[in-house]
Image (cartoon, rainbow, N blue to C red; front, side, top):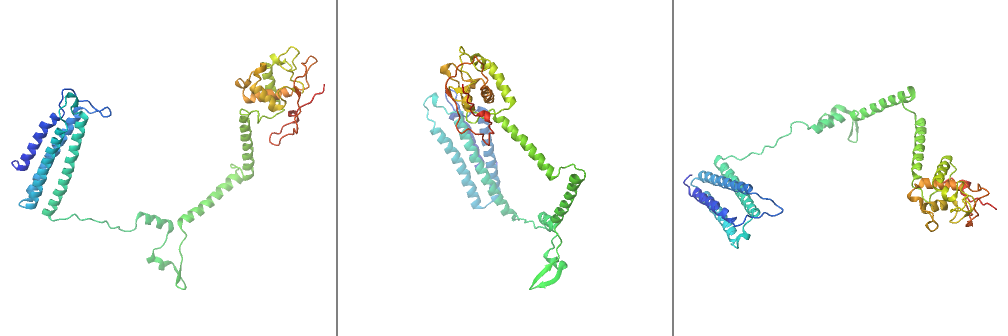
Length: 387
């Protein structure tokens, strides 16, 4: 084995690889790694060492195969040809690398990344050869031993766990035991069997009885659970609270198209406070204005930009910039604008003797009627004041 031609050729191949591989990456300047993949010299040394170890294993297995083959001509020829082929492939691979790297100066030196891929490919190639050798070695072992691997197919002993579970759930008799439960009623060859009720059905039945007892005691004896009538009323009351809470949130999203009038004292009080804060300077404390006030009289039935809750809401929201009234939508929330518009409409007919003369047109809303969905009141219609 130590003096075999295969070992000598393998040693020569390793020595050639050891001398040629470093020359492939020589250059005057340090090789530059690709920006997307970082390769360090220790990794290259590890791949080279792995390749050498695989070559040693390949040579060792080839020697074992040669020894086991003995005088068999076809085995010797196969091993020798494969050994030569391996050496030729390695030498051709290194020669191809050498031919692909002509010298053009230091800028064309092989990079670490290129060397990495070459060594990785070499290791994969050697690993494939190693696996093929293992398969051949196993075949040779079978030839010498004379035994084939026997495939043992386990035979099931008794019923499976699924069959056992199904049997417990149904208590069904097997075909061999059906005579034990036969009722001896034969109708045209159809036999009648006295099968027991399945346990799962009995468990459900007993469970419903138990639940009925629990329900009866809790609902009609100790009154811990509400009965269906009380439960219905409680759910309806909770639903009404939920609807009221939802409608309360809609007041923040009201606009000039959905706003409605209301005589709610809380809303009117909120509007009064807003009026005293933002509107007194132009319309006076009572909303009637005066001959020297900037804003028009808000207590008569005449309106410059339309009356009614929707028009008043729109005027407050967008303002009248050409006449000096700002848009209050940036400072007031929609529900606050609604409260202010409602309060202004309640001022109609409350002007004093010093109120400002009417301006605009007499507002009369045609076909005004309370809506079923908004429950608008008569206060939402125009109140015509005859002066």
